[in-house]
Length: 201
Image (cartoon, rainbow, N blue to C red; front, side, top):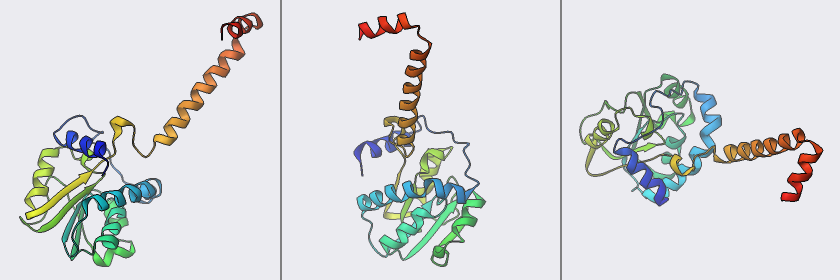
């Protein structure tokens, strides 16, 4: 995994500034159309970095539309796969996908996981940690349900370094805005002002 991405994740886990924790994703189909391709790309990188063993008991915290869930099933050959998400619409959407027969989907909060202690070999959170209001509590819950010797892992976009999925769009919009402002200035200058400006460049 990219070192700066992991560092940002660790920095945020300590309770530092994060994204708006009141964000809700209630339109799962639209969210999947918008974010699915980006989620799949970073999910593959994360799983390569994690290199989990086959036959593990998995819990995904914050499954959203089920994109990462499907990647785990395809790439990791888990013995079992459980997922939680606080959004009913996300769980409804994900449980309607072909993967539903192989996954235990539950509506639940990361801060109060509905599982006994030491249940899972791998507990993973994909692009969700920054939306957990009480991150230390959420991480404590993830650790609680992980067996001794198991793995708790997660990742988020590196927003501080402008490495989120909307970076190309934002960059293009900023460039367009700068061009438009420069063109507008040209149009409002008088011929004499344009001549002075031209001689100065």
